[in-house]
Amino acid sequence: MESARYIALAAGTHLQFPRSVAVLTAGYSVGQILGPLVAAPLLRHGYHQALVLGALLVVAAAIAAGLLRIGYPHRLPAPTPATTPITET
Image (cartoon, rainbow, N blue to C red):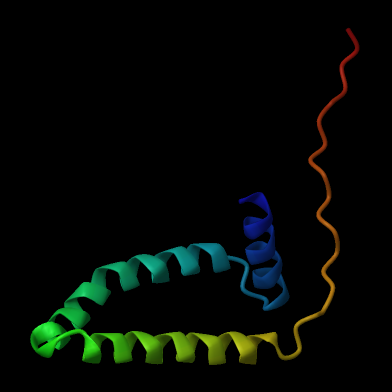
């Protein structure tokens, strides 16, 4: 989990969007709320329309991720370990 947070923070810093983790969390929560409201009317005639909508959203997310990947550095600096004071016993 720590590495995922580091990747999100590094990506946000590179994209010059320092609060990217907060925006991603808010966007995820909006999707959790709106998803059922949008999909429910599509279930009237079965799952086909809802599944097509889901597939289109996945394709759109993949395209967006691919576009963000262009120009992104291939190597990020290694995370620095947390410094903790060393106490002698």
